[in-house]
Image (cartoon, rainbow, N blue to C red; front, side, top):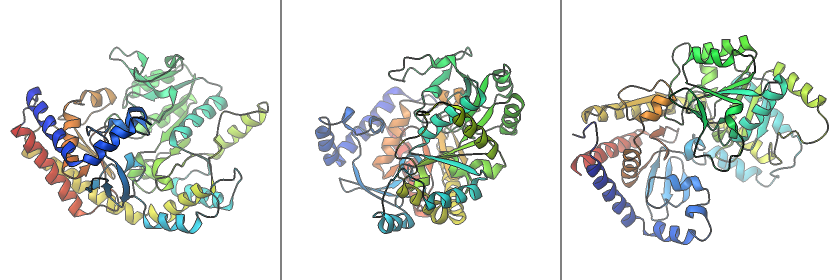
Amino acid sequence: MIQTSHSADRLGRFHAAETARFLADHPRCVALHAQAQRHFLFGVPLHWMADAPSPVPLYVDEARGARLFDIDGHELIDFCLGDTGAMFGHSPAPIARTLAALGGDGATTMLPSTVALEVADLLERRFGLPMWQFTASASDANRFVLRWARAITGRKHIVVFNGCYHGTVDDVFVDRAPDGSTHTRPSLLGQVHDLTAFTRVIEFNDVDGLRAALQAGDVACVLTEPVLTNIGMVLPAPGFLEAVRALTLEHGALLVIDETHTLSCGPGGYCRAQGLLPDVLVLGKPIAGGTPGAAYGFTAEIGARMQAVKSAAPPGHSGIGTTLSAGLLTLRLIRTMLGEVMTDAAYAQMFAIAKRLSDGLEDVIARHALPWTVTRIGARCEVQFSPQRPRNGSEARAAFDEALEPALQLALLNRGVLLTPFHNMLLASPAHNEADVQTLLAAFDDALRALERA
């Protein structure tokens, strides 16, 4: 059996064997990666791509449904799905039809369109908020919402939760130290401003901590996912999100819910499924069919305050918006996703697959007598290297094993399965089937046996 405290030598041998296997099986990837050093930082067009567990990046020129096809001729089952961007599968048939039929009718005009009204109506019916603005990414949406929140409240401070992730928004790249102090994440490059001056960080599921953070009455908004997903999944304790809603109302702070990842929880996201009513809702990643597109919705009361503060400001750029936001093609893709792809039937299929995945992973972990747990919500599940599900970002971070995780993910990749590279997250799509589940479980079991033998 694998011991609770893994032997560094055993893990090193296991990782070395899997690395050698990958390099032998992917000669074209190795050659292209060498060629790419001339053009790209770290040999990749987006430096995040170098964070994958493989010794050189996996080059993929074709993706369909829940399958990736690399340039060395391997077919892979994709449980990463572009880290949620392709949550409903790669190029669903309705998206392909929309591109073929409407791709010649213009992509962007920087003018309103009838399709924008159609999309806004679909969004209101699905998510319950009447007013919307569109952006190119969820990072942009979160960034702009923070500007609006500060503008309409006249307050400078925001509150986020330890381990949060809301895209590449400077204000949220802060962590909470064990002594309770806030500090800028050391990984953040080129930051010259003190982010801790206006951002307070508390632990998820800490109602008393949130109450204290709001007490001074100077917080513009609380920005959170309903479930932490990027530090490792952390579920809200019973009553926690209801307490967040009540405290923000009591202290005059806006509640901004970022549903970019938790769209996997249902047709209306986590909030609609649980009856949570935020002031502002952020949507991103999958809503434009895997192409750049995002939106943020808000109540009529918040919308009136936004319009008032903008009308009172001097002429000039508000610092909110980008030229390619709300383009014709993007809106048509969002309309297709909401109307034809993100259906109740699709979610039912995703939930069933995710449950079989999580149940099966728990069985494999139990057979190997490992002190690990599986956390699932909706179509998303994750293996965490701790005996209990973490209650906050600090506990989730403590469960990381920076040597084991990439070795295990590389082993799964060598066995034909791709997980999200940043942590052990799996996402079920309508394109997955029972055979895919069994392939993943067999690969997971075989990888653990290989580690035991190393």
